[in-house]
Image (cartoon, rainbow, N blue to C red; front, side, top):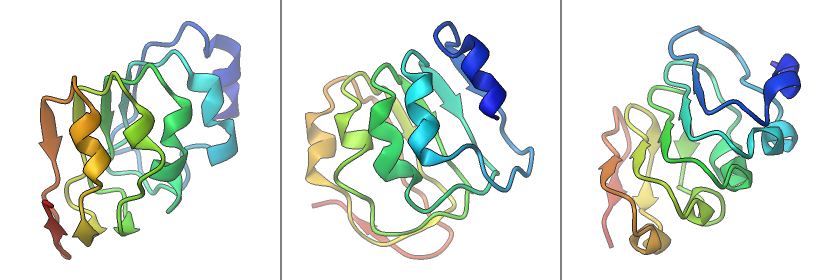
Length: 124
């Protein structure tokens, strides 16, 4: 995936759902996708800190990480900094705890899909 750097400033949509990648790209390199608007990663294995690092892609409108083997609580930093986010799919992972209150500050967010296969998320 490091080859993305060659066209990272013009890339608007990346759909690599269900390719069984074991790692999308190192979290510290996500900043090269600063202009991306649609990032669809369903069915790939992501680093447990991916959501915490996602805030370096400020143009994101749609982020889908369904069925990516993510676990634990949802981080406050990261996707809560995505002020243009319209859709967030977190389904079929193993999250638990409260949804971050900062999701209420995402004024463009119109679709939030927190379905989980195990675990539970609570709306505060």
